Image 1 (cartoon, rainbow, N blue to C red):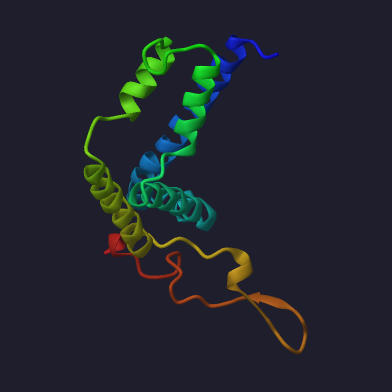
Image 2: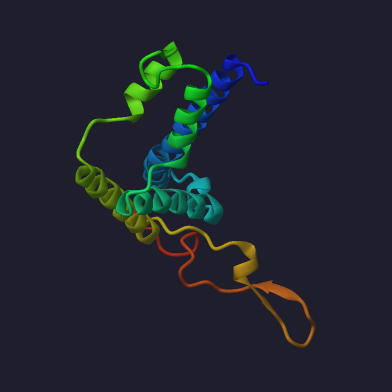
Length: 165
C-alpha cells in the first residue's frame, strides 16, 4: 500500500511538470523574439519551434473542446489519494505555483487568450523562420549518391536580414 506522503510527493511532481510546461510555452515565445533581435541561433532550431507550437496547439485544442488538462486531473487525483483537500491544504510550493498558473476567468476569456497566443506563435514562424532540419535540406546527386546541401531560398541564415540595413 502506498502512503499518503508518496501521493502528495507525486502530486507535487505533476505540479512542477505542469508549471514547466506552461513556462516553456510562455517563455518560449519571448525567447524566440528576443533571440531574433540578439541573433541567438537556437531560436531558429526546427525541433525547438515545432515542440513549442505543438505544446501551444494542445493547450488551445483543450480549451476549444472543453477538455480539462490531464496534468490538472492527475494532480487533483493524487492529492485526494494523499488525503489532501484539493487546493486548500497546500504546501508553500503548491500555493505559489497555483497562484501564478491558475486564474479565475470565464472559459471564453481563456479561449481568446490561447487563440491570440497561438496566432502570435504562428506569426513568429513567419517572421523568425526556423531552420529546416538537415534531413529536409539535403539532396542526392543521382550519379554519385553524394549528398550535398540543397539551396533553400527561405533559409533565414542566408536571406538578407533587415536588421543589417
